[in-house]
Length: 396
Image (cartoon, rainbow, N blue to C red; front, side):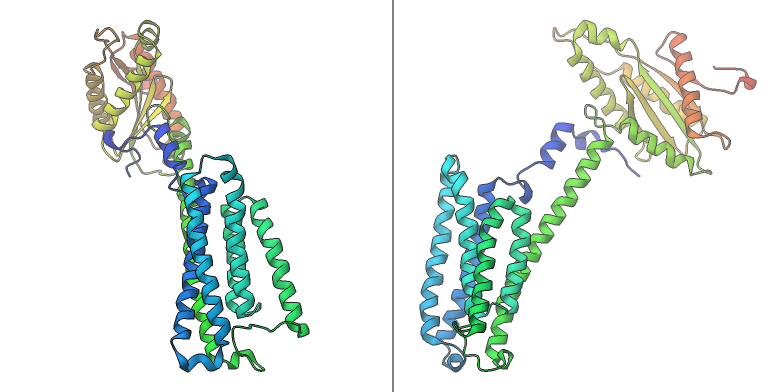
């Protein structure tokens, strides 16, 4: 598998953080953007009501099941709410920097949305499926999008309103579902039942869509945060923690042949001291990009700490590992790195190789590669050395 993107796709820690925290995620929108979303959804709900009531007034066949004068009056009310919600979008967009807008508009927007739906909920029946589903869905979505103080400041009065309407309807002081002519068992009114379905479907679909968007964005956020914990922020290579996980997986793959290569940039402290740490960082980035380009997609490249890198070469024998290391050594020597004054900065690296054996664990190979790397340093640097068992001679 390809654990590391090519150079053109590599991304830094800053870019990942920007991606994770970008405004495209609804949960990360500022409070006024969320208000705009609520106002648009509220206007859409009232538009649904407008369409339904217009249909009723234009269809005499259903007048026997509804209170026509009340439908006509409520159509005007819904138009007023529809226009009012659209108008409230303007200060959220244009006056978003003013303090009073940030403090007041969230309460007004959420309160207006909830109040208008509860009022319509009473008109169609406080225990109707449409009212119940709308109430539960809006509370859940509201708690995800807004601070609890804003949500509860709207839904506590709304809950008391619905409870009061239910009680007074039960006591006979108010009509239950006054928009409809319900005699006896409410479900006998087929138009009332079909109307409930008409209101439930768009609200349910809208809330389910919002839930799915929020959930998918949450999962994407979690994946990106997990990705942040796996990569080195400077080079975009796998970090030591991720490399250790790769080695642990290799420990369970008994039959796979692989090679571990440790490489260390020679005299790296001199680059930092003489040319500045920013040039040292640039050197690390250039080496990382080069290693990613030269190796196979099945191989793993990681930053093991400081100026030290590690290569895990899958399905590689000793000869193949030596060729890959030599290729990388020569390429590092050819990297063009200039000082702030335009002077070339010479870079070289030393390599230590250890090849897997059935009786050795990955951590043992890592220790062997480290010994080979030490020998490469001791022999004058800018070299590739391979670890051999002491009985086989020593290091060559």
